[in-house]
Image 1 (cartoon, rainbow, N blue to C red):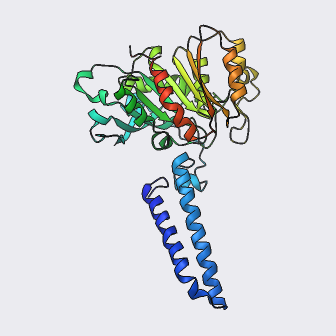
Image 2: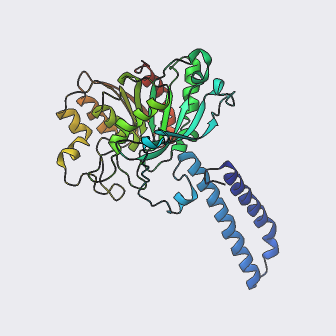
Image 3: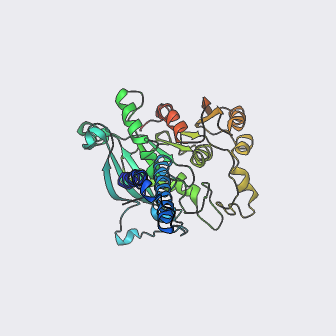
Length: 373
C-alpha cells in the first residue's frame, strides 16, 4: 500500500485507537513497581505516541503532498532524473505514453462522458531530452460524440517544490473544481496537464535551462505543449494555452508566460515569488551566465524586456504571506500590452487551504483568456 493510500491512513488511525484503549485498560494492571511493569508502561506509552504521530504525519502528508512514496519519504529517490530516448525511425511510441486511467471523484465519475477522466502519462521532450510523469484531466465533453471534432484549451498546472502531482488531484482538487465550474457555466471545458516543476528530481531547477544541465524551461515552453497537442485535441494557437502554479510552480507559471507569450496566453502565480533562489536544493543554476540569471528575475524582465502580449494573475494575502510587498511591486511594473490581475486575501498562509480558496477564481480567470482555435 502506498504512502498516500487511504488504507494506510486508516490502519494507522485504527492502531493508534487500539493502543490508546489498550493503554487505558492495562495501566492499572501494570501498577506494581518492578521492572516488568515499568517496561510495560513505558512500552505502551512509546507505542501509543508513535502511532498517534504516524497518524498525524500521514494525514498531513495526504493534505499537503509532501512525499509521494515510501522511497521519497526515506530519501531513497536520489537519482538525477531519467532521460528517455525515442527513435521515430524504429516506430517507438510518441511523446506521450499513457500508463493508466482513473475516474474523477465527482458524481457519475465512473463514466468519462459524465465525469471526465484522469490519465497517468509520461511526457518525453524531444528538445530537452527530459521525461516527466504527469496527470492529464480530460473534461466530459472530450468523450461526448457531439464534441468529437472539437479542440479544447489547455492549462499546465504546477505544484510547488518538492510537491507531488498527486496533490493537485487529491489536495488541491483541480479536476473536481474544473468539472464543477464548467458544469455551472462559469468556465469553459478545459484540459489540465498536472505535474510538478521538478523535472530532474531531486534537484529544484526553478524552470531554468541550466547550462550543461536539465533544460527545464525548454521542456515546459516547447516540449510539453508540443507533446500534448500531438496526442490530444488541444488548440494549436498561442491563445489555447495557459499555465497555473503555486509557490515554485507559481514562479514558473509567471516566468513561462512572461518569457514565452507566443506559447502561453495567460499565467497565474498563486503565492509566487519573483526571482529564482540559489540554495542547496537548486545548486548552481546559472554557471556564471549573468544574462540567464537576470532573466530569471521577473522584476528585471519587466523592467528591461519588451512587454509581452500575455495576461498575468498574481495572488497574495495581507496577513500570512511574505510575498505581499513584492506582489504589489510586480503589479506596478507591468506595462501594456501585458495585462495583470490579482487576488488579495485578507489573510491566508502559504498552504493548500489558501490555494483552494483561490483556485476557483483562478480557473475562471484563465478560462476567460483562452480559446481553442
